[in-house]
Amino acid sequence: MTDSSAERKLDNISEQVSALQSSQATAIVGADVRDRLGVLSRRLGEYRNGSFIVLVVGAVKSGKSTLVNLLSHCYVSPTDKLECTVRPSIVSGGVRESEQSISVYRSRTQGNQSSDLDLVIDGLRGLVGSDEVDATLDRTVFPLSADNIDRVVFPTFNRVDDTLITAITVADSPLLSVEEGRSGQVFLVDMPGFDGSNTNYIDDSRYDAMSRRVDLILFVHSSVSAFNVTASQYLDSLREHNGGAPVVLVHNVFDSMHWRDGDSLAADVERQLAVEMDEIARKGFNIKREHCYAIDLGMVSDYVSGNYRADCKERLEAEATRFATAEVALRDMITSNISDMRVTRCLKRSQLMRDHLVTSLDAEVVALETQLEQRRKVDAQLATLRVDCAMPPLEVTKLTIDARDVALQAISVIDVAISGCSQSMNRSSSVAWLERLASEYFELLNHDVSARVLSWYKQRVAEYVAGLSSAAGPVLPVPVLVSQPVSLLKSFLPDGVEQFVPAQSMVDKILHRNFNADALCDMARALRAHLLVESRFNLRVAAAVETLATTYVDMLEQHYNAAQATLATSDVADRHEALITLRNNLQDILFT
Image (spheres, rainbow, N blue to C red):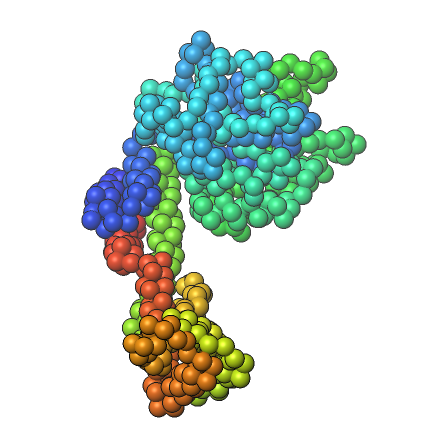
């Protein structure tokens, strides 16, 4: 695919993504997906601004910072025996010496490192304005100087460091200079060692964010360290975010075996270089032998700084010349193919981002489908709740028979009162006496009937909840049934106990004659007989049981009607449909 056809492809895809951003489906799914589509749209268009990002990665003490300093032709990254790089620094050129600066960016919100880092890079690449960056992040600017590099960039292990990234602008270098007619500006990113104890690719989300944005990987490896499991795992992670990116390998030679002859040392270096190149190629990265360099970066750095003995000058000068040759080759590799490389990487990165977005939409679609399926199953089961939870007639009969046994025990309240009656009472006192006897009898009967019905429904609810859980999983809260009172007194004695108290003659009233004990016992026996008439008893108790059963069913129905609101709603169904539409439209976009 030629540059022009690839650019047309990117523009066409960008138009499709922009249309999705303003679609009805995107409006339904919400701001988060719309924002992610916006990021994808920006990625699709970033080839137009002409910038190119080189990611410098490697293990701790591999020489990354030394290489960045050499390529920047300026002291921009501290070097020391300790772990020096604990946060990303992005270096660019093309400013006057008086304008060289260090910009320290800090996030205002915890947990936004990835999106905030993307915003900084978009700002540096000219994809968004500085006002948008400053509206989201805090930025502090310092003049570029060695003292400020040591003070601002050097790690501070004795206090919390909330720096997101450091952006450094330098005057000029062969790689970073902005020349007239050159098709893009190069950014050099110095990453922390991927196996660092203070920050590393596993613990630091900035690695993922940065890995998604690179156009070329500059992999630094030391001759005195093994290509270990951590390096292999990091390359796997890098491939996941930016597979197929071109890789330039710098094998940093630490020459300490002075007793060996030159040919033997060179053979060792070549063997190590071949192993490292093979490991990187096996991970699926684009690496070529002509883009692999074995250089003693320490020698070159000391030569540049003048830190050497006079008798070593020739040797160091030769190594510095080799580095300069490699530097020019790297610059030419980038500048001669910068448009093609940038467009190619933009297509691949954008496709990978689209694929990740589709995967996340798929996951949400599945989650919503689970909710909707749960709702359908629960709706189907709850639609028959009143039938499923109604108390069967046989159970009503059983509870009525059980209540009859309790009634025969409870009637002893009246029997005891009859056997102990030895006084006389006027009419009002007689009525009060009978009411107390009836009240004590029904208190026992009411409690028994209520407890039996509640016990039956608790068991029924346990079975019903088990059925719902098997249909929809443990997504609905278990109802708590509260004991409901029952009052059988009014049912058995709608006219009260007065019907059992004979009317007194006018003479008895005038003379204030009381009912004697025999009369009172007769009244109590009549009340007793009335309460135990089997047909009346069964009818009244069965009616009370059915009323209680209806009350409990009403409680269950109210509980589950409220609980249904926690399951899928019409909004969920609309979002589910919109996500499917959006996912399918994204999948239909052709990147090849």
